[in-house]
Image 1 (cartoon, rainbow, N blue to C red):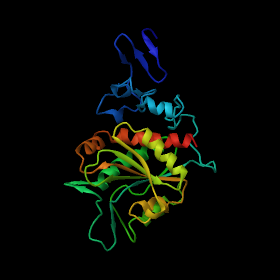
Image 2 (cartoon, helix red, strand yellow):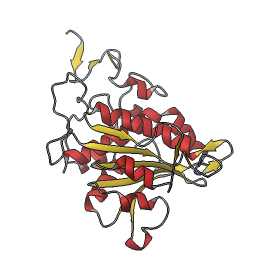
Image 3 (cartoon, helix red, strand yellow):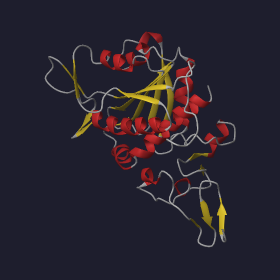
Length: 274
């Protein structure tokens, strides 16, 4: 094709300095452009197929080459990820809070800032994570898709919904104005550590605080009981930032699809490197 350069996923029109087709997942880049490469930062970012962009540091961390994780859609001919029983990997995605325990007065909003509730922002990102993990061929269970009413302990019902899954991803926000995303895991579980690192390394939208673990003496503390109580292979709690941080909320609202995609890509990279 004259005047066009084949870059595999896209054709490049060198005379115009632009791509000849929209990115395959352009809907998650609506706040930037449907034709963008590497977030308009080709020096620091790698974007091999228009599905997601990430730092060149991350590319070096996974061995200096790119494996296409994004062709698990129906009809692609690729095999979805499998667990040790050769079944599709089962992943539970969880949006924090948003439950009304029978006998209580109201739905638990989580952290609150003005009219912003943690439960709603967490659900916005969890929905996107679940969507892309499903698209990649995994079997996904969502603990909730809206506000729910459950009897008993506010965490026990989540563990029951996640029972039988290989991986648990729980999405939360912190109270206050914290700017960075933080991925928490059980320090006694090396699989959870590797999952947390894979998710953290693939994040380019939200500022990153990193990943960390809790000690056995902290297992009874709040949401950490999700991690200690989950019986699958690996589990993490992702704190997206503070509910009172304006920039964090703008990023979640404007780039929910891309944030969810990058979390799902991190999970996929973990599964491929097991």
